[in-house]
Length: 124
Image (tube, rainbow, N blue to C red; front, side, top):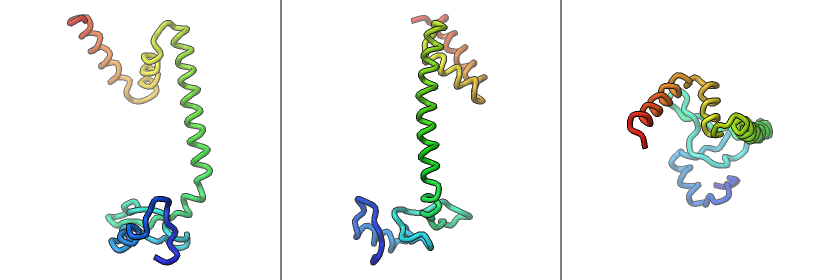
């Protein structure tokens, strides 16, 4: 356990137990393991978790996540504005755009037709 850096909230006795089980690996060349059970499976065996590979790209990933959040907000505002101008509910327009963008357009069209049929036949 000497020299092992623990994540906040990890207790030394828990970490020691994980190491004895083989569930916590010290990463070669990247310093001590910060956290973790087992890494991804490669051919049925656990891979060694390489913290340095994450640290090398973390800033880039954080920027991408921020861009994603900004784009989500911009998309929401644009849908609301177009829906208001078109006289439709924003949620309906959003579903249409998402279905049109993806590969689920035919499925969404079928579900919409079924829903319309239920409203016409059964009513409310």
